[in-house]
Length: 113
Image 1 (spheres, rainbow, N blue to C red):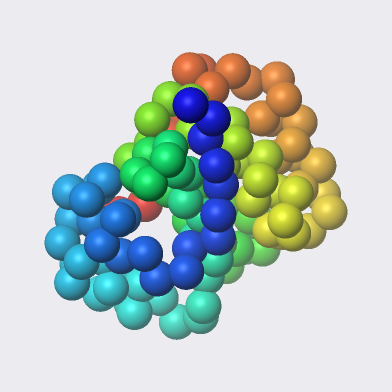
Image 2: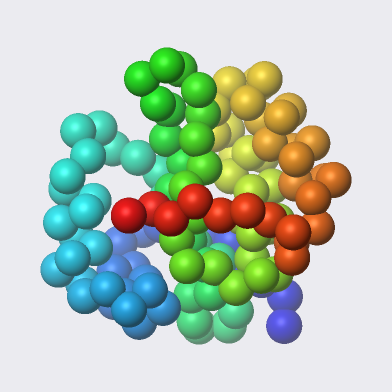
């Protein structure tokens, strides 16, 4: 099935089922950050199969932190978040170039927590 990407809209129960974290743990992680951050989910039907948490670090660089992801979810998450305005134009260009040249199975993930 095709992976569908959506912006996180409070689907804590579905994300918890995928990550193995409790809903309370996910809410606490979300509340820990000072500013609102966009989160992106990869879906296969009604089930979450990946999560991406982009943010801008203090040095101004755009960072992509992947939560648990199925291998085929990395590239769509990266491409979708970049095309939907995450980061500067330079960040989007770099992210798009990375996702175009790096196959999903070769993606390197950084844990979100």
